[in-house]
Length: 372
Image (tube, rainbow, N blue to C red; front, side, top):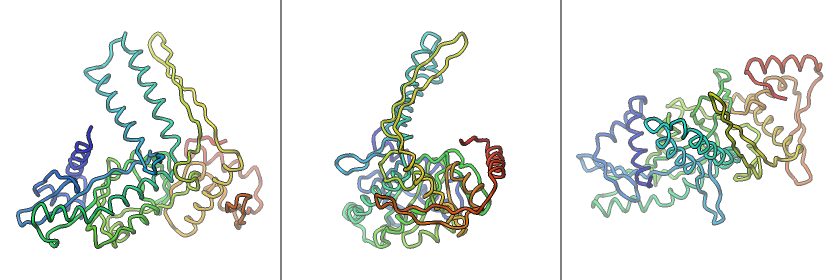
């Protein structure tokens, strides 16, 4: 699929989602849908109404599953993985479903596909998402004047008849998070991309004089529209909750995988009436001291968020520390390791081991998990 097809597909999805939208978002999408749409380059789309008003829309993607290349550019791994999956589905699913003799071939191909894609997912840390968002947004913002001038020169129109917007299509994997807000705690729904504080701060750097609006297409479910210099107020009007991220990988540098040298191999075992997938995984994980520092850092962030009444998102392990252990914390001691890295160690008041074990078991039963 070429880039123009990707752009057109995003516009189509934007118009399709209008029926599910409300308020300002629905009104704006409806306005766009009634304007003449002109395919263009820099910006990618131009919308023109009957009164000679122009809206230039530049589309780009931000992918959580990204990597930093040797040339300093950030490239998407997730797009390639999704492309491979999209090629597999029509080959073997539906009308092309394999016959019995082809089933093992189809399953072996699927096993290899999963084995090749999973390392990208497991190697990704939160910092990749933030760095990819910042990189892509910065590169497009610096070209805004070019987009505006291209419209002026092509259509012989004055500045006051032109508005420029960004259409940011975001893909991210946060399905294992737990979201804590005023309503309580709930497991993140499949495909939902929370709005994180770091993303809001990046959006707040966009200059008002250059860009009139930003459309955030978050995954397949949510569309938000915000204006530079009004980022937080616009989000508040759209009931967009902003979360502090507080999982173990928060303190990991971007593009530094938690699991190094990760390799996954798949084999298939044919039985009389079924097939069994077997996946073998090998990797190197951080030493126990590093893991402990990452956990304590995340625990401290979650504790501060809870103390200050802020929404936060965390892993099940950090949630367990918050729900079981936090009430016994009486303070935090700052510590700096031999490499100059600062972190905080909780100071606990006395509590019996039996009481803690019971509370851990209650937590595990409540969330259907077992953490060793």
